[in-house]
Image (cartoon, rainbow, N blue to C red):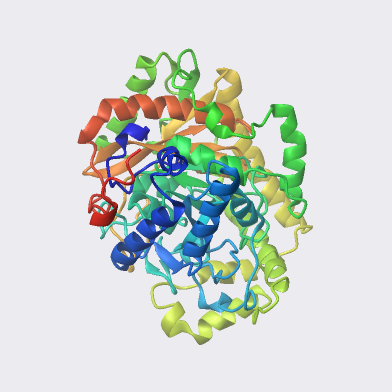
Length: 523
């Protein structure tokens, strides 16, 4: 969202606008942080987007103000409040993945995940932990996105009875409702881009390995990644600039950055935001991924295609992603093995953990079924427990190889055949009604090929169906974040100008700000 879209006193103020105000001395991080903490206090009882508030946020903000006064901002995020998904370790706060099984597991003080240490070094202010789908939506075959035992049900700010999608539900809903300017989510398959679409925000799912996974509750080392969520491509790019770094404790992240130097990975992704990037760009439209969409939802893709052409893109419509329907079976089989292995290794490394294996977690849930299993069961946990769980197992290796081959072939085929900069598709269906009896009513989502291949994707809001947001995804080959960010930014700028003030805002975003801060957040 351009800075000009942030109105006086608006919780939608951009990172850049806040930075300019703080640098000019018209605003302090302490004031900004107090503003967002007040919004959390006032709005979160209805939204359940935040699971824990950081009691030290004010102190962090005052320390940031002192650094700014002494030597200037350390980064684009100096003094900026941020939410961090509650499967990411943050010292001084619980890290629970939404489950009481992990309460106290990190010791009295806890520890910072690698990416959290990066945020602290950059001067960001962690205001709280975002709610999530319990165990990142990997507990039940009939789970409900956005629900966790500890955090309750995250609501979609556009319609509280609608689902925010998962598993980075609180991160997306929190940004949409103006509880923080930016947030960190995580994705294994769709958990950044789908909530971003359902809640009308921007989500970047990076190339696997670009962002460290150290200190994050795992599902799959082959597919897991953290990534930025924000109200604009520019703000998401600013956050990615901090998150993307080599980590010696994450072999994938260390190797990725050694290799990534070949691809000229930038230190500041905001420099990729080029309003003219779509002129002459080659993009392919994947329509089959949203074949189940309603006519109203499909019309959003038609409008996006028209906009791409207006912006000078060379549009190949449609393109085929072969055999995408075959990816899910080996992917799910591989994830079961990887989760059993990964969660066991993670629990074994926690200093205060009462549970050391997946079997221990299953037993805990069974003993506390009235609380933990009140909404849905733990069939996925049980299926994972039934696997050998070893990553050297031939059956597992065959499943992972098949899933990766199918996903990479699906995306590489149109990218290479048509010399594309990106594949474009609808991200997911509009938000469905939250339903504890039947679980999620996910009509379609297009995250699979990028998620399973480890390729990057950017989802940003474009259209609305029945007042509910629908996102557009740009997907590309590994290490193509700079190009995808450029394309998404160009599309966002044109789409935002075209929609103008008529675009609906979540009711919880438009509730205003405390009178004492009126006008202070103007860009």
